[in-house]
Length: 153
Image (cartoon, rainbow, N blue to C red):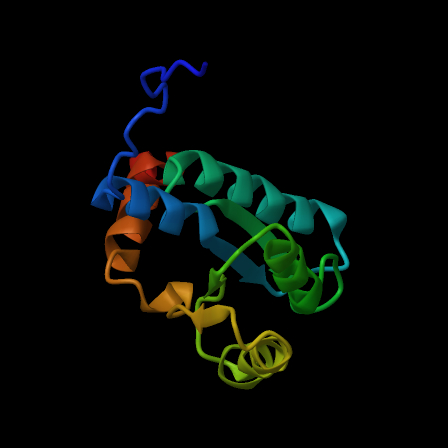
């Protein structure tokens, strides 16, 4: 004789928008791209900035890394590969440049295009470079106000 026991399975909760937002964030990554320098301390400044952005982003991105156009590691292709290997489905490349020189207009888009061709299933976008930010004038004035030279007048 078999006894029929009540089901111990719990009902499955429906897929909620909150959960889908969290999953999307887990797959969304940011790559901060700087020029790179022969001076190691300059490259370390970019790495430290990346860490501060990571803290400030407060889980808006699953991963935030930096890469360098030249003279330092990781390279842009290596930075993109690292994010993809860690599960990124969407990557925003943020050029950490003040002006639209050749690197911003040609070099970074060329590097991204190669990665995009290699990984057509990954969405890779290039954000506007830092110098285009509407908050740049306010940032500059705030930095000046906070500096010792502001009191020299």
